[in-house]
Length: 373
Ligand code: ADP
Ligand code: MG
Image 1 (cartoon, rainbow, N blue to C red):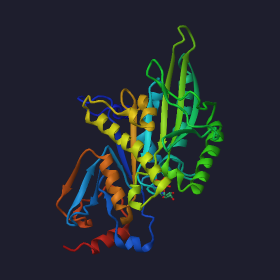
Image 2: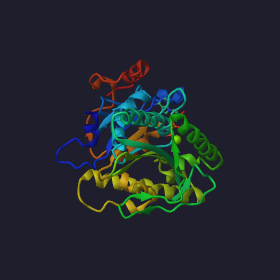
Image 3: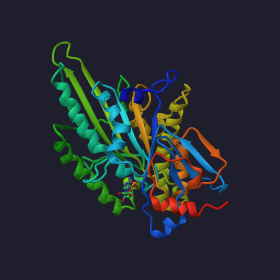
Image 4: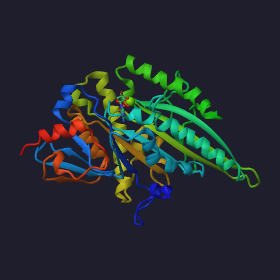
């Protein structure tokens, strides 16, 4: 049942729609930031609102496929937004999951997480092994699972499983499958086998980030899990399903932070891939048959066969509640939303119907106090 929801939600729409979820992380600012109040909050499991900076007596409301509030656990995000698409990978279909949003809003927490709170990546890989195990017993197919791990940095494609490699070209075969000929592809037999390859490669990336001006916030990290299944009996048909799990570069506008030189070039390149991604998602979700601009950036070119078409895609937009993120949050929400509504009422606690998601007591008190006319 849940699978259907991920495929389409409306008979008039094609299966190309990208599902959009928003995840708000808890407030992590210092005490004085908390005293300023928070600029965004959830209303229910699909709606949220943000202060309207143009007019403080208004808020802007957004509607999404799912809204995950600050109390939402890693398991809940996984079950609601990612788990439903996984069975398709075993049937030769493609899928992609993105974490989008400003640096510091929780993309890596959502995708990678920590040993105590594992994120989407370890949960999805475990789940795929479990799905394959369950299938094996009653069907006439053999399954093989493999992984690749790469980074797009300055519009260069770099192999994270073979860090000394150079920029790799992206190709398309006669069946319109996208491939990267020189990319390391490692067969994995178990989750611990996956971990053995993935963890050191992730650490490489983190180390590089502190040396090279927050490289991790400026590059797209892309994990590919490929499931190939082959019929045991003739005609021995073979199907390949690909799952891309993507921790995108930060969506903040680097021009505002006064970047110069190489940094400016980097942000330009990041903006190209992110900007193109937004155009691709827009054109897929609008349902009009205009040309989808996959070829305009490396990221969208790579994802061409796994985003739109018969593929299943989920975008998790991560946002932070503190005021210092306000403009980045606003632009991330506008990227994520096709529709928004400006409502003519102040952003105050008491004007809101009982929220579905629990809200911290201290915040309620503060906002109630701060809500004059
Ligand atoms: P990004 O990858 O978008 O730059 P991170 O995932 O690194 O952001 O998150 C920034 C900080 O916030 C990290 O310390 C992370 O552990 C914490 N964090 C993010 N989201 C959550 C959450 N939902 N619950 C608890 N902590 C979070
Ligand atoms: Mg990160």
